[in-house]
Length: 284
Image (cartoon, rainbow, N blue to C red):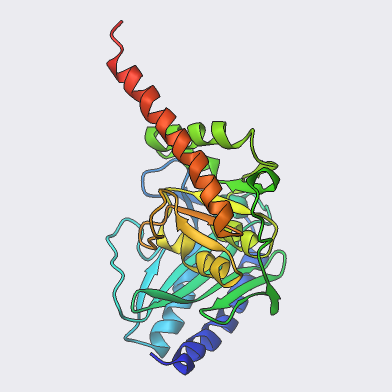
């Protein structure tokens, strides 16, 4: 696939995303329904409406392209192939949106040959458009952005999606043990319930680091590319290479900062393992 093809796809989808933002701005009487059997995962008619509009216009223009999306793929198996694939989250931060908080966005990314080639994240409430095309840098409202390049974790502002701890006992333990080790060491910790914007905030320097486990491809496809194109570093939270189809990520403003956070988290994970083993072996 040529650079001109990628640019064509980007130029096609960008105005559609901006136009879809009007649906968020005009939304009233917002009510959500639980999905996937989780009591903390909501979908609204506006999520479905935006995804259907984008999918239809893309399919009409490019009928051979594939889709992976939050509502499109909900409860289904999905596989990333070499074909041009659109990865869409119609509203990331749905709970924020339902409560009329301004931290939500539309996220669209494309992969070709299983690689991310561009990402778009648009927060219409703040009129902030984050974009990146692979190899061409990251932008906020068409102005180039960069990470802070912070290399000292004691001076870093860390975004940590603690609400994921509600998903299972495993994630609860993972997040609590890591927080116990991280909180005393860093400048501050934030949590605001929108993975895509959390990544974009690392890219533009509002955060120095962001770590989250237990997400889906549409939560990370656009944002992780935007971080990398802004000069940041993205790795699996276990220390392995980042896997878009199993996106447990640590995104930081520099590689050095990632290494420091990984060291802290390995210490936390080891304590968690030993503590849980002691509990399982305890006989009253």
